[in-house]
Length: 513
Image (cartoon, rainbow, N blue to C red; front, side, top):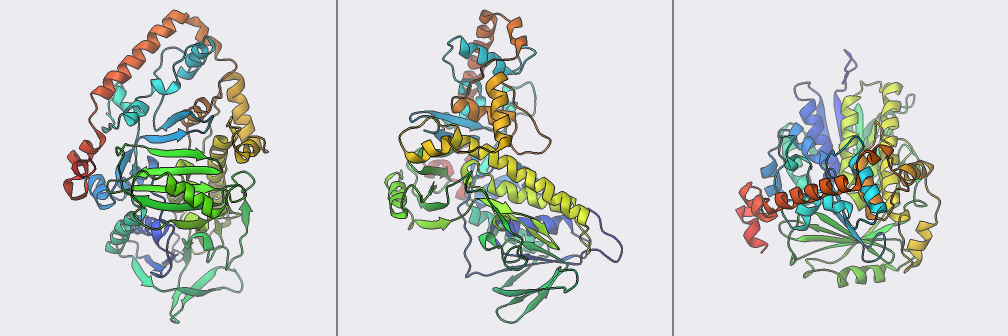
């Protein structure tokens, strides 16, 4: 973070609240404490937020820790449960299921990575799935949870975790936090923005009541509208619907009846997929789909017919177009959240992209001039974040073997991004998973989808052959036994929430049984 004398940012204006706006406000207020920089957030109670993104990735824990937020308190205030991964049902073939865990597979048994030994055993007819060698997968399946062990030699150190929470409650929690740190909230609708005639930088926004709010740096968290980044600056949008064609969703919460497990579920349907996100007090449900293959009424009926409990409201319709702004930072305006782009919620990446946008903004925090080198670097790294998440999401669709519905056949035969082709070809040929300096998903995540959707390497690392089949089999048996014993010694998920002090009114375990 750099601030030059006389050119330091004095006034930050955040347009829009919700998860993106209040995460941004909370992080900037914490980072800029004591600098004299004012932060104003403008939002209107009349303008709703999307408010259905309730599943997160492990990175959110470090965001909260940086702000000094107590985890158990936050969970109780947001009705949160723990999350060890995402279960995918019917994505390869109907009847297939696998869990993408927040953790590694197996253990080091030789010079090659574990999955190369697994690939050799698969070629010899071994029936054990890769899931059999993951503690977080087996713990999730048995609705069990404990915190990771800091001892790297322990099997309980082989995983991470995230949260499933009420996004609206999370935004409200951060709103209180940010305002306690000096952020000013202004109620009102913005009707126009004014820019400097020479630089093009935004100078102020004007509210419906005539009030003008000036700033040096503007953060657009106005959602799909892109009030500043698009409507005012006309930045442009890269449409990725040819890669990710689902363009609508319908969402509704329901009462819980099944066990409240520490994982999210994504079940493939005929023209999209359905999410299930268990919170302490309810289940969040939604059906993401492409309207070229199913009508809105049919999509809604399919969702309602597959709820596990009584609906707790009316279904809510959402419309979107996957893609991103051509520049997430334009002039003195940074777009964070849905205003910057949207990649469907299949792998719970929306809140992570908000967090990434905030992190890079703080790292490259500008002066009033918004140096072009900083702006270009921000756009470069955020482009990489979006591109590589896009590829990971596309993989789920193109790596299907379903012939029961037109959408799945069309997606399997569509044109892939070249960057994804290279990744899949490297794995299919030699079991290699290329790693990048930038990119959210690590090799274990790619491995989960490859193996879960029946992409098995044609060959493996030749160093594997230094061990006999019997030696590998014996080591694999030990790994599975170790995982089974560890799961048996792990307590129930809801019991842990209660013992941790994270339960609503201290009674999550009892209330959900």
